[in-house]
Length: 115
Image (tube, rainbow, N blue to C red; front, side):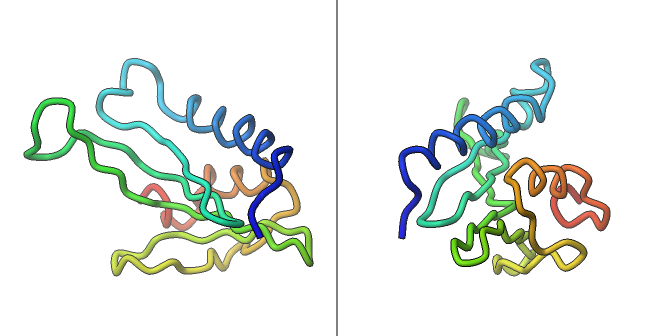
């Protein structure tokens, strides 16, 4: 089941603002963040210039996934392993609020999201 229009509005506001504020303006040409909605999940993507690409070409690497479980009203938090597989973020796997899930990613105590 996909998100409702109201849910998408909240995601745009909360996650969109987080992505905008994550990187200072003077560094946005080097690294930036974006997100995509995929079913009941929000995937946060790191955007960087392509290493050997044409000018303006970028790479988009998924780095975090927030999956909403309607039955429990919880956001489950995942990180992308080097193998390309999603792994639950075991120190704090769930959060009630989207803001709280983003704070878990931001704090990144174990270096799973930002290295």
